[in-house]
Length: 232
Image (cartoon, rainbow, N blue to C red; front, side, top):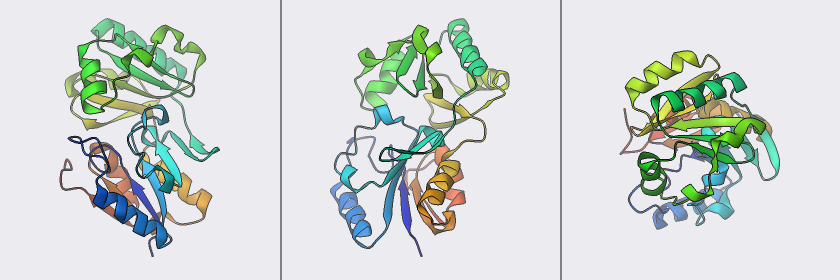
């Protein structure tokens, strides 16, 4: 019996075209909630950038964010893992050497390195978040713990960067950028932490996703649903 539903946001719960949750999805989630299922978000977005699910927010029991690195329910922290500081430093150095933009997602704030048009396109067009001005300069990140780094790089640049970050792994849900997260962390790890807290098995979960960063959770849960627009 399915006890919990986990939804990716971008491309799954929210359309890239409309940037809103369809009415049919709102109704379906409401019916599942009434039937006794717990409802969770499982996203690559950090909590600071989840602002497009207001239509169903009142139905959500908890969140797996930053691809599993930060998981919580209400004010209760369920799981977190941060990137080793040496790897954060190396990524900053790469951003300066190669010249790419990157978002550094911290426990307390979000920081940006080399703000440029490519980063603006990701933030404003893909994510529908015109908030570049809200990000702090990366020079201030030394006092924060970093959950995730999202550099705007292509797969070839990714192949150059990642061997120098031994404490990290990478995933993609867009060709425009990658998400760098602590090694051993993914959405499946986050879901397992949530399941353990609420007292159900990961095999009693159903998950919905469309991107490369959803593959681990779709394989781990009892029922994984790849959306029609999903990547292989």
